[in-house]
Image 1 (spheres, rainbow, N blue to C red):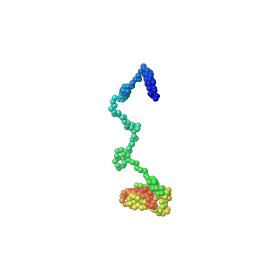
Image 2 (image 1 turned 30 degrees about the horizontal axis):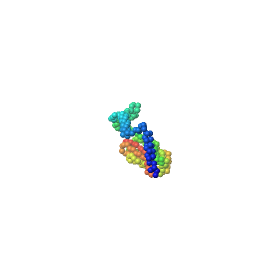
Image 3 (image 1 turned 90 degrees about the vertical axis):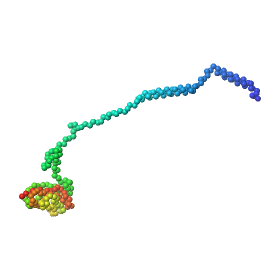
Length: 239
């Protein structure tokens, strides 16, 4: 009922409103249309230009070519021979010839060793002895063939044990033509305490043949152990 009654009036109102809106836009400048292709072209150009500048600067900063490696000489340390101030000590040689031998140039005869003393090498704390001198028949004594004689040595007990029964003064080498024998400490009167000395004697005989003779003796304990210094006799038999 309402539509049929007011159709003409509605049309008039709508037309009037349309004309009014159209009149408001008269004289206005239309909004520009964005060209997307142009914008993309500008962005690409700017980017290419910036990259070109960066590549140029990098190329200028780097050397145009890598130099070939060269061999650089290395200084080695210098070694100098010692001068007179730092020279090695000079060794002098004694060229005195040894009697009965032909000397060799540049070599020195060694000195004769000193006589052995009463040391641990010759014995031990318990058993040791030392030679104190010849009482009779010095070395080199001249004798007639077949002559009997007594050789006596001065000897001292330098150990801590007593030389008692079982100890002996034993012939250990030399010329048996001297008719040597051993001395036994079998009697208490012959026993020798630590630090005590005695004169010990053996009976000998000069050989019948002309010549030089020698014999050696040494102490031996009750267990068969030799100790102490060696005692000797040297004689010459002449007619």
